[in-house]
Amino acid sequence: MLGILCLALCGLLTGARADPGALLRLGMDILNQVQSAMDESHILEKMAAEAGKKRPGMKPIKGITNMKVKDVQLPVITLNFVPEVGIFQCVSTGMTITGKSFMGGNMEIIVVLNITATNRLLREEETGLPVFRSEGCEVILVSVKTNLPSNMLPKMVNKFLDSTLHKVLPGLLCPAIDAVLVYVNRKWANLNDPMPVGQMGTVKYVLMSTPATTASHIQVDFSPEVQQPKGKAIKLAEDGGPLEIPGGYAEGSSQLLLSAALLTAELALLQKSFDVDVQAKTIGELPPQTTETLAGFIPEVAEAYPKPKPLVTQIRVSKLPKVTMKTGKSLLHFHGTLEMFAARRRGKHPVSLFLLETHFNLEIQYSVQENRLQMTTSLDRLLSLSRGSSSIGAFNEKELTTFITDYLQEAYVPVVNGVLQGGFPLPDVLAINYDLAELHLVEDALLLDLKLD
Image 1 (cartoon, rainbow, N blue to C red):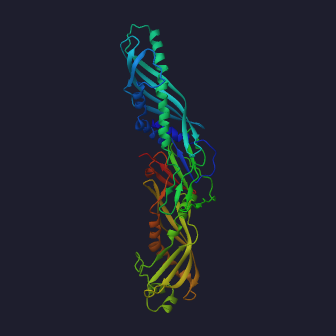
Image 2: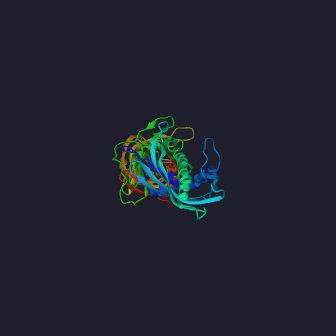
């Protein structure tokens, strides 16, 4: 009855739109995948097992005693979107009803039937989560075969079947729809749970409004809450345009769109982790990190330190990192300072040589692992370099462009990638496996084209 589960999805949609920080479009590919819910929950089998049990207040079925239901067929579920409502669901199945007939003999009725219902979305005030309720459940008989004697009058047989099937089956099978909806609604239970971004904070994908059902998909708008450990929220910037999933995707497919503003807010949680002190003498392919190497770019260093001293470098991010996206390319912008020190003997503080104001970009490559968005960066460009202070006198900081560019790529980018390796959580919706998604960069957003295999 995962069909219903699907339905749940669909139900999520109905309301006013604003500019969300994330947007999920659910097509029939995801909804049909949820049809395993009926198999997972075994609702029809459970209903069948209960059919022959006597319950308080239950009236006996006229014309049949010791009724049992067996051989329930694997249901086939068909779903259709109902704009502004939810999902229309048809469950096709079959079963065998046995018992003692009014004639005294063993009776067997083999029925093939459809259970239909409209699953409408409601919103639970207490939790803010979507809740689905079925309405208009009907049981439609497709075929009926019995072992009743063929010489019985057709009119009598029809009357008997009408009383035992048309009156009994809805009460027996329609509760299965509601039971599956309970199962489906539980699949949304974790949607509002805060998800950790390392030890730096949490992200919660809060529904912006009741999701909206169209003729082709369900659209779920999120207003993500990015929260620091002590409860301070990081507001998403509003300088981008409205989020819209571009056209051209296959009918029935599903996509998730994450705004650059959301990723910027998430990176704000990590800002302090981007502040680093580097004092290794050997770094990647760089020449030895000493005053002697630095003097090759700034002669004044050699005058101040004729004997080579190890370098210590502090990089501090002074503004919130910012993510920008255009079709095919995404950049991470850093504004901050880079200060170099000459190390002294143990126990003595290093001496500042100079402090540079910097602005540089890192190009971001995105991937998904274990349902978390991963980022890997490489240096794109050093955009500006200006001297803030200097203990070695005036010098032309532009002479350091090549040195600082290489330093950032070899020494700083690995630190950034280490900070980012934990990734950012994606919406917990119907157990979607985001690892299979194809990723595309569009204007001001990252698009995940969801795949089932």
